[in-house]
View (spheres, each protein chain N blue to C red):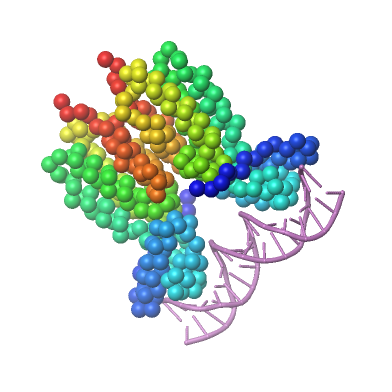
Length: 195
Length: 195
DNA sequence: ACCTGAACACCGTTCAAGT
DNA sequence: ACCTGAACACCGTTCAAGT
């Protein structure tokens, strides 16, 4: 519904780049310990910059989250490309799904942001979400073609299942860790027993 | 980890009861439109009371959420009791699960609060969560005894699945409604095909 | 027993002034 | 091109004064 979202870019000038990196490092630490709604003022002061500098590089919280998670999600996508065409498409899909859930629950609140970005173009993470969608859809299609996964499962549904698993994992973080079991149930629910 | 959590009680004096009810009505409306993190000042002014009055009746946001959802969740529990001992335990379980998911996603943020309350005694909603856990466990046990649901599924896992479904539904609210499909996938994943 | 609203703290966000 | 920090707005939370 919006115009193009702002995507943060690493500055060319040395001082700008130094601050940009320091903010990102502080943000990742803060997100990990407090969640996606960590205080921006805290992040700025941890990075040793004034609040205005944080806003200059990352005009919205969403743009900071996108920049903080960009590398990890890029790796997830490129790992999917490496896995595509693997001898056992089901193994490839399940391995990738486990990895995806881990990435989606990097910190509290991330999976919610990603889930909304998946279907909202006015969001910094939307491009990355589209790339993940394509990667996941490819692996899914291959596993379905091999007769290993129920053929009526759509890519959208795959991501709903991944997001749900990641959210449960996010909630359980700290206490009982229910997520490996959750994903196992999901996987056993969508796979077709080998004849 | 805390002492006993505060549970809101409807006052006996007429003016107090009037305000209590007005705050609850305003809170439900605000939660439904804005989510569980709706502004408490807004709620107070919508209810026509000063902010101090809101805090007197509901000293924490969690206590207000608990009071706002108490009736609905009580109905869910009593419905489970009515369903227990039904002729078809699988039908009973699935009907109850659908209802539970609908209740858990009454407004944005609720399912997260409930999921945390389930395993945290220092929380106003914990008692209600325990009651729901018992109800669900009973229906699950019956369906498993009838051979309709995989016998290794635990009540904790059942609630992880319900919470995950509710969260997906919460996210999808407004856009594409992915949840009925999500729950269907979960149900088909845990049920044992009738021989 | 209950209500009011001022007071304080904290945080997000903007912007004029500076290098 | 980039940085600083004061300024403003908004909200959560407490509490002294009142009925």
